Length: 395
Image 1 (cartoon, rainbow, N blue to C red):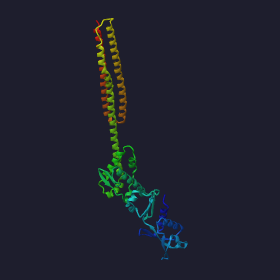
Image 2 (image 1 turned 30 degrees about the horizontal axis):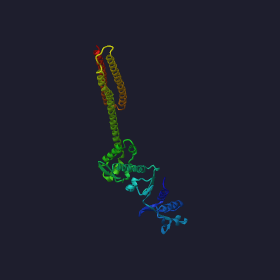
Image 3 (image 1 turned 90 degrees about the horizontal axis):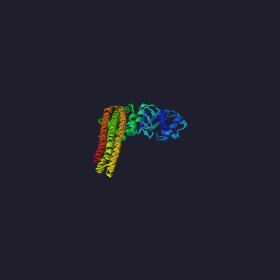
Image 4 (image 1 turned 180 degrees about the vertical axis):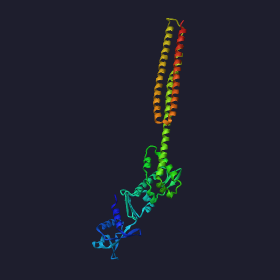
């Protein structure tokens, strides 16, 4: 929305003839006043955009000075010398002579106003006018915000980004810079990502420094605006490379972690069983020491029978426990087979490494199965020795 006083200023400016600059004012002649012009001048006077006191002449002869409040209907036919403030700005608009003068003021560059009135060619620009220069001018503020944000992230000052070396900026431009399209959406979208936040900041800082380090600090911001599309392309390309590398590292970390996890779980199957196995030899040895020479029908024979039955039950339960571990191994094999099958689909470039890990895990599982079979055979051997002792003790 155009401020009322700015619209009034533009209407008065377009009515002036023989315009010239005098003491930070634009002075011109208005022929034939009307109610609309008087209303505009009254508003401008209230906003201190005009002096409110004007000379007039009759037939080319200068007359007295009259204030805006003193203008009567009889004055309407006279020629009035009207003055307007040449330079003025508020938080919402700027009045200045041309783009070059506006863009030399850092405050106007880093904080774009919603409306600009250029007095040299009586041009009033807003977002609704569709002027390409003005639209690009509005976007410059976002570029400045990016630089100050990166400066803060890199522990520099408001005008200095520090990454390996400091680069400083002077936020001044030229009218020709605004003719370059400022496509900032891609970088803005990237900066606003929550994922890889620190990495993105480093990538953007690195690219900015490499892109601008050889440019004079006074021309650096202008060069950036002119070549923003090239910088954006470099940043997005480097971010894509980072994401690809990150994904590779992530999957590599994932399947290596899974490998470690499954190796530990496979080996723990026998380790847990081995803990129980340690008590068997001592128990069997103690039981066999109770076997003594005996004859059928004696108390010693009965004791020997009980020892034989006890050892047999113990070995039987142990064999059942060991045999049950084979099912655990098969469940683990099915689990990691499904996992690595998914990883091979998701990351086809890593198929060889994943197959290698599968082969290694299969080898580890086979080793554990072999140990279990040896343990079962050893247990049965102990049972056989006990039977043999029983038989030799019977006379």
